[in-house]
Length: 108
Image (cartoon, rainbow, N blue to C red; front, side, top):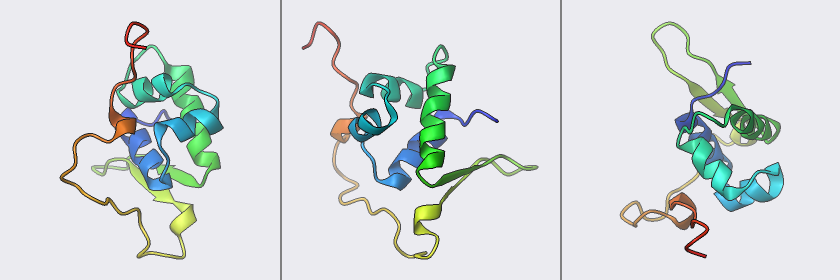
């Protein structure tokens, strides 16, 4: 199994319409870990694979690069509804809460 790049894992989460908190609840990894995996922290390959597997079990298919084409992501949950993709309410908003860095131990 190829390891999916961190940016593609984030896209997959957004395709599923999940926040980092929801991934934490259902995948069994902390929100801070999801945040770090999506940022490409290199010392977390086992957690990146765990998150990747959770997305695959949730209906995401990762399509490996072929030739000069990059990674692809297919959401089987929307296969019959080509026009029903996730909608971003306000692209002008600041960083969503689930995209902000998690608080450090000293901030809580």
